[in-house]
Image (cartoon, rainbow, N blue to C red; front, side):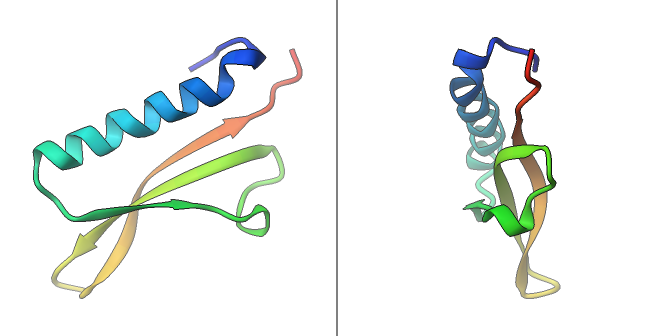
Length: 73
């Protein structure tokens, strides 16, 4: 999504909520993780990873990543 700077955080939340709503409807176990700055790319300002439980591996794996990237427009 491309939005005005003042709407960036709202759009990041909307995109993340769209992803978690799908997982909720599918009744899949997941967790939402906020990455620390050391784990994000240099252009990202805020990143949420959605990790789903993979029973075969017996651990959570990232399946979705939502990022706020400051474009400086």
